Image (cartoon, rainbow, N blue to C red):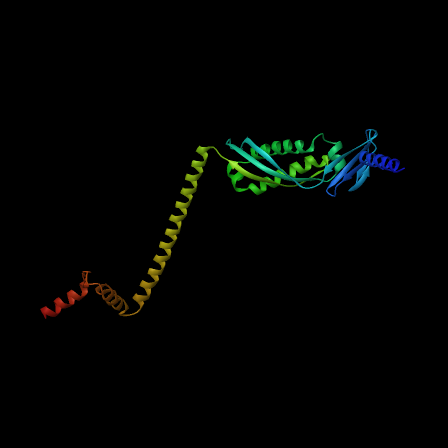
Length: 249
């Protein structure tokens, strides 16, 4: 009797192992009965009758897929290498199985093609300066194209833009020239401000009687504090003429 119970239990366990399938919380179970789609099973243990039924489990979590480097030519005919990463998730498990053979491979190919096309529509300066806008454009195109497959694209990020060596040197020279131009402009602006302040000071000194002579004496005093300096004092011509007249009188 004991062996009969044990044998019966073993048979039940074998049957359960054969017909039970576990669908995890992050999965969707696409069920087929005799080759026909009958629905998507929620997470839990599900009965699948061998031979007559089949269930394909689809991972519903967000996937980060690295798009390998693509050689592309910008609108201004410059060859660049661009790679990216695409974040997406399956929003409809049934479509991901029924509408496309291998959605992971299809998404990678779609992202590569879209990325090359997007790079070819912009010039190099725009590609380097507006990377976020181009990434958003690629994301929108890929999302619309993959919607019939039941896939939702979260974002596409351009990781790196590889330039030819001669173009890198050209950009470096251009950046250096831009920095020098800014330095010249800043120096010129400083000289203008300095000239304006000196003009204001001269106007103030000229408006006050004796102020210019006091300023001259103050400057001489500052210079004479260092014994190594030699001072050449220029006497105004008017003073010399006045002294000459006094001597003749």
